[in-house]
Image (cartoon, rainbow, N blue to C red; front, side, top):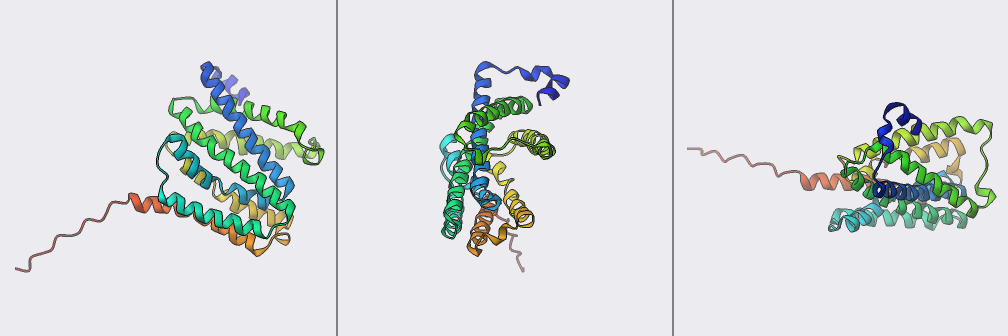
Length: 258
């Protein structure tokens, strides 16, 4: 992103000092989420980490009203209860090391639920999305570097020659491009709605984990039932919001038979 801005619009490097510090702070928060997510994968597996990731909407339903000082909506509480039931189903049948991975993943989901709420505030103030991404990624990189001394060698390995192509795909396509679009969409969407757009990530991720790593052999039926409840809750909430906002149909006037 720094190279892209240097070639296209160097003015986007400049942010007011207070806003720059705020964006870097959000990057630290995002970096902590990433550390938790990948740590969860290494402690458990892809499917368990993504099941935890799917609870982001539950935490956002709590953190967004608290930060924006509005009432928690009943529909969000209902969906939150379904998500909690799904988590209990998942955790009840997991082995101890998988439960630890789930717990770390839930911490990461909570951290991520705060990120778009605060991000949206900066977007509302007119902060360019590409500038935000540049400095947020710098903050996330700093957080990852700070976390490395506390992670055992089992959880950290230096990339080998064959790792660089998938790492570049993750960095450029799945991070730089995807996050730039996500920040841009926050100009029109609430943080809760923005997080709902990621609901398919656990679906595709769990399917790929089953296909590539045969993780279905390690997981109980209760895991898939709990994950299904979490995903259903994520799609139930926007449907309830749509029903609540839909205007009542106007009744047709009664015709006088005379």
